[in-house]
Length: 408
Ligand code: AMP
Ligand code: MG
Image (cartoon, rainbow, N blue to C red):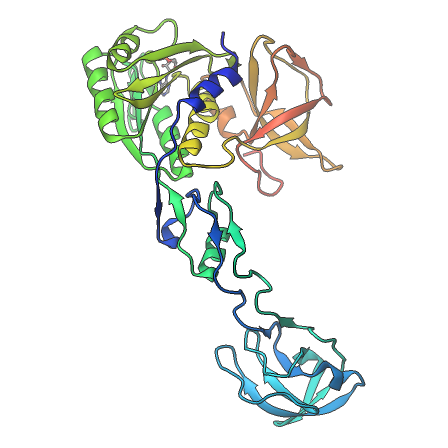
């Protein structure tokens, strides 16, 4: 058996990052930034009011109440014309430029206006109160996104504010196929004895969608050498990465092995992990190929451990592994000790704010239900074999539960 970390290191070392290009901001969600994003202008671009109220000289309102003459009104989007001098104020809206001379804003709630051109200020302010200074958010030359960052909606807002289209890494197109004579389309209403619906492909395509990479769907391929060979060739023609499921375990017909040896070379490993021990990695006409085991949970784990990090590496991401957090096992578990075990668990928070992990259902590698209910893997290292309720455990998060009712 091959240690998981050795298998992962081998795969990552074989992966080449893709090129880069500038993309319109609105198309950059989930893309990985390839060059530091540097701001050209201050943001905010000008000193402006943080409140609806009155722009004043702070020195004028140290003794309150005090009556000031209102010079003008400035709405957001318009420009003040009158400088503030002793004894004057300007009615100002949130986001409007500060008048020259003014150094603070009094909130409208802290004023009354006996007439259109007068205001009575009821509380004092200090210089700078309720004023947003130019450059207070970002300054010219600031690096606002570092290379390797996957862009979120919040990054996009920041880039929009700075008026910048990012340079991002190109996306790998990933060909996906399910293999197996027993596999039928999910839309099959009545299953003939011996057949099962293809659950891997939609899962893989969805995981790829979550990563934002284009997918080439090659459908279900029977255990037939000619069919398989032509599918792998089509995949290599149209994609940067090939992911197939099934046909890599011991009992399988050796087709995949034969074909892939002809087409570019492949290694079949027994990886010291559970689920997901059988795994094949190679290339078809130079295009990396991941041969994942057919059982759906093995497919999921193998995708998480090998394919996802490899794709993120191609995409230039700085971090390619899921977040690990420290949690507590909520129940006793016994597992094999010769492999790293990934238990499907759901997470609850106890009164102390600790994450408590409990199995989300049966742990067979064919069992979908516990996978769909899981938030994380409880990762049990090689050599441990059993944990008791209350023991610390590493949680590899693939879903962050929302709210408290997350066991669904
Ligand atoms: P294999 O890796 O081809 O030996 O398949 C292992 C197990 O996974 C068998 O029980 C297969 O029927 C099942 N399996 C293979 N491919 C799929 C698939 N696409 N969807 C659901 N189950 C599958
Ligand atoms: Mg099979």
